[in-house]
Image (tube, rainbow over the protein chains, first blue to last red):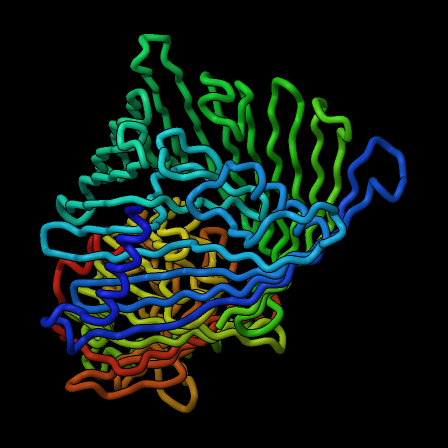
Length: 369
Length: 247
């Protein structure tokens, strides 16, 4: 039985029957958001044919249900989306690729033979888990985000997350996992996570020890990931500016040479400007990191908080070796209470593709409730 | 100009003389102010109203704090629901529920506005114990909203103080701060704070509604209101831990 199924049963049980001791304080809440993201895109090498342009939209209803008792918590986060145009075609393509990840967008039915059917409804189960809190530990079962990241973009020791870069900011996707967190004082802890697969030997299992020592947040991680081991260390500290680092070494069972991956970053601010820069070394190529196969990569961001309600940011991701990269210019306005309006311009360049350059302009309107 | 200086000097001297005549040293005044706003523990519901031009956004939160170095806040408004803050001494962590991510805030960001407000993380973190961090000097008396106030100048005596200098207008009867000006090292006025509502809780006067105006930006202000204030609330020390942040 899949862990998700187990977790679903556990969540429902948790919602129906909170622990007896917690009956007085049990509560639940329902919140969510509605987002609309229309966009237009161009991909070509200077030609202006109709095929070089595409249009699409993604209108999503997200619901977050949370039940809370004194020692138990159950959460479910689901999304239903209406996709049109290029967004629908991209979803069909991803669904057909068979590279589904745990919280992949679920597209019912099979892809149409012709690309004419450009509207579809899709679903996504972001999280679904039950968490039990005891004085000595907490246990979590189900689809959850096990977040070990230090960096904005790259965290080699963050082995349970996959990055989704299709949106306006990196999103870390959930894993189907069992997690036990044992606090060791106020700012230290031991974290044990198991994310088994159908073949348990191919799963991911980790132990992570973290602590705040002399103002430095640090952690050591040892993990069994597929057919090999991974050992990692990461930290975050302040020396006038914020600095962080993350290094992981993978050692395959085959006896082949291991792969070293490391990331280091810095963030600082001057007045209303907040800046961050990150460097990522990937010694394992596409096998170690399919999303960023290049050996040397850079990330930089500049955020200008023009007012309390409006900000402008520029983000650049660059593979130094092959010259490919993306840049995103984003304006965010708090348009009303609980409502955000964003406009963006995204440009990408990849010398390996036939259509080397691409530009996308779009809006993102979000209302939370 | 000389006349103005003389008049100002006369006001200052008169104020200092009046305070001395009433038997209040500046240390006494600050001690009574600290006594009003210091607590072993506190629990309250807060509301932050951020106004820029004619636009106002609100944020609500539940807060629990122990002493001056431990605080835990959870935001309850739809936009930020479930976002939590943990303060332990000068360290601050934020938990983002959607990402299930705990992030330690970098030191330089402590001067940035918290959740888009004029209240910096540093303002929120700063201990109420003025005497531990500032050297006071009585500058005279003034009137704020019709109430007689002592004007006290505070000069930072420890590097961890949020501001190099502050001017406080302290209610001469209730010993509550009615107005404050915060200055940078350069002497530039950074922020002005006003107390809009004072409540009587047990044997103390407590500022339950305050306004903070940034002087570095135009037409912005943040009003912070405290409701259901429970001073001396029972607190489980495990509340102030990273484990509780993601509970």
